[in-house]
Length: 117
Image (cartoon, rainbow, N blue to C red; front, side, top):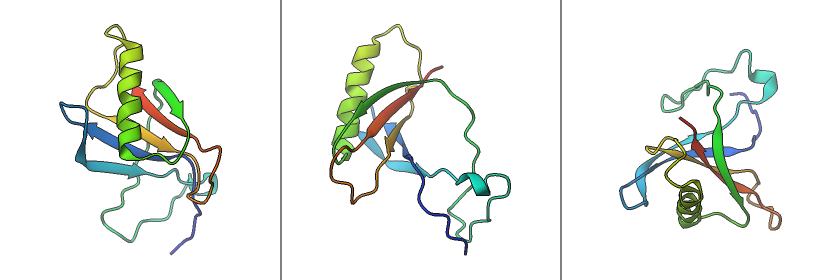
């Protein structure tokens, strides 16, 4: 019952299949605004969970435009290629992040994050 407004980034945890495509399951994460961090309101929907994301080191790539699933898949492949075989990172998931509201037509920012092991 509390309106908190939208925060950025909207972070989608993607689970890649063997061929690099994304599995049907995803997890969407939104940052709880600062004023609610100490005591966030309890969700009324049982499918919504409050989780604390621990600090992490990431490998990241950035791109613009209205991001679609294929854009995230393609940029994840480019990041994987750029890192080569020497970098140790989680292969079972990665984050797809969008920073802009849907009505922003230009200067959009999207990122793919791999979590360093």
